Image 1 (tube, one colour):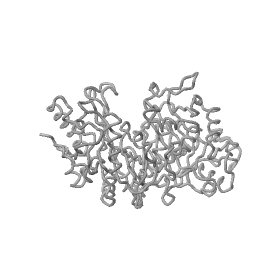
Image 2 (cartoon, helix red, strand yellow):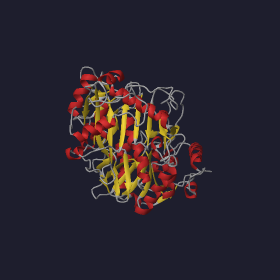
Image 3 (tube, rainbow, N blue to C red):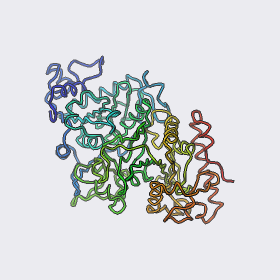
Image 4 (tube, one colour):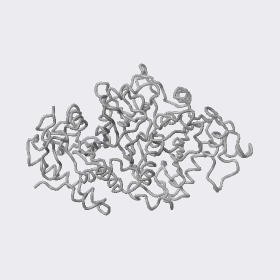
Length: 566
């Protein structure tokens, strides 16, 4: 066994890979490291008596294992490891399951996100995963923390077959010190990643050969049938989405950074809206790029690393992220030149969802420990391909709740076969697939935080002006950065605003350095009547989407809905 060999740690790891208590399995099944059962039992169950357990290995050692045993893994010219996740190059939300059990059943928002699974099916998946892991020549175990605030963090254990997965979670979780590892003890949540092996599709509740199943009573997750590493990362977010609100703290799918004066800004946004790009600001310290908790004293990052999109990455546009692609990082599903080992950031022939996972400290201005004060500004990002929303607008707490529940951005025409015009994408709380409670619970907690702290809320559109996609043009990144700078330094909050017809959004009359004509989008369209028709079309889509949540939404939120512009 590699790594820590203390009796307490060995006992803890042995316990992790035992079959479920009371399960009907042969004696010795699921044992390893020579523990329990006869040699015959081990042989019958396919368990290797001398299985190697690699525990909290260094990146260099995980590189060696991956290069030796995992087909297609190489070292790029930057020193980063290039790994491939197989057929699945993104999450499988339709295969996500949550066990419906007595301790959490009344809390979970059952329906389009959280599909229920019975306990027996979960245990069948769990045994299948443990059986597979125990038949491997080696497994990898990562013990680490989720949450930078020691008062609220949880101890997480990852058990997996691939060195790539172990390095990924070593980067994405918070790495314990040697002293913390020695006293780590039992984990508070365990992920069994047997993603190289499919689930049994005949198990009740399975819809394919893939399953990502969470059990809040057992504090466990089981992954079968997908090698996409992001399932583990988002699995931890799902756990924190459940646990923290239960303790009165708000879990957020957001990035965060801090100014020289200690002022914190939160950025919410779906993929492609600029959440990672705008939070990686050389003038501000990065707290985190994706997952945070807002509690009574401020905010803390859940993760110990970043998982940035690589498509189109360049040093000119995103120097901090570009330079983080070095030894210890993993580039995932990127095309690599066979001779030079150079990464082609523009090639999306494998997937458009190319990624890089690296430790937070790879960002030069990262704040370690990754904690901050109460946010001074909350920025909701969208990429409006309809070209009708203003580039920046100030929100009331009620409007913020409405936009937060909506979680809007838009897909552009041509991204999918048959899509001829912009398509709206609504994801509740800007993290719909990871929510556990009803979206209105998170929105109500956010509004209360805004009222308690006096933080300002903003809607920032990083999409199109002068017309929809294909007609107008995307707002220049330099203008968006100027708007964010004006938000962060407090100057934008002092500029008078004008209420936009229909939406009721409050548009600043000016932003230094930004052309005034783009601030009021209808003024940049050639045909104002066409603008109004497009705006009203999008407004109707907002209203249709919000109808799903009216059973829990407050009257204040309903009143903040955008109206048709006559």
